[in-house]
Amino acid sequence: MNTTDDLPLAGRVAVVSGAGAGLGRAHARTLAAMGASVVINDLPVPSDADPGVTIAEAVAAEIRAVGGAAIAVHASVADAGAGERIVEKAIDAFSRVDIVVNNAGILRDGPLRKRDRADWEAVIGVHVHGAYELTRAAWPYMLDAGFGRVVVTSSAAGIYGTANNASYGTAKMGVVGMARMLAAEAAGTDINVNAIAPLALTAMSSSGGDRDRAADVIGDLFQRMPAEQVSQTVGWLCHPDCDVTGRIFAVGGGRVAEVLVTETRGWVRPGHTWRDVRDNWDSVTDRGELHVPVHISDELQLFMAVLG
Image (cartoon, rainbow, N blue to C red; front, side):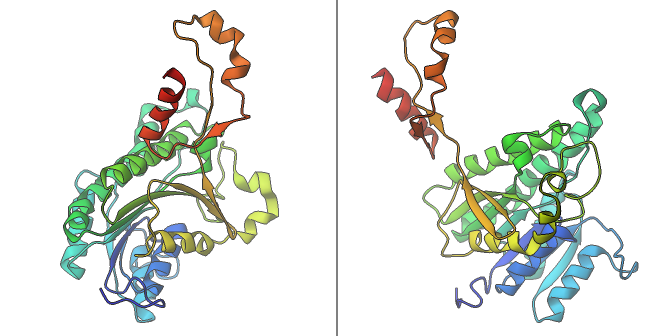
């Protein structure tokens, strides 16, 4: 495929969910500026600037106005079959799908005792089921082409925990698990799957609610965290030259950092009791020697090394 450093995604087709505003809009515009044709997926929400046009249609029009190629596809990724319908629209319009950015998300704030199953299922539905369905629909086209880039959207709320948003945090770690499993499944191909944990000033991130908010912790600094800064990392993770897969990156305000899952060396005594665990807890949790497995086989090697 003919690409240049200015347009490294020329000839590629990207699907971005939740792309009518905020991070999704920034991702779509960034990928379009890199040369990709973009499918803008979002709900049929009217644009503030022109109520006769949806937010997805407005973003697609912005991209076309500067010479790019984009279409809007209205659907909730949480709905059964929505992923297939979105991908079918992409194939009809552009004949291929190379990139999927799973960005769509919702919040249902509040302590666990005040949230019901409907709230839980709504959040899990958009973040986890939506990412699964959209990625699954595009996956065969990536396998056939021998190329693909998938980005899922995690959050520090899921990785590190925060109060009053159990469904959101669960969903955000759920998509990390999906990304790592698909990265392993696609090993040996040019299909990469990664996760980002973004921090950016958007309507959702700065909205009110019962949860702990980044805006409350870092104050005015949040104003210097535009969505477009997150999208530059998304652009690199979707680049044909990027060979990174199965990884997590914290991104925001110009900072990009890899998030690592580590293990201590641990403590070993075959046949031990719970009292032995208690009495050796300092050794179990000693962080003096940390290991960073990147695959399940790496973690198994740690067991083999100490159990012999």
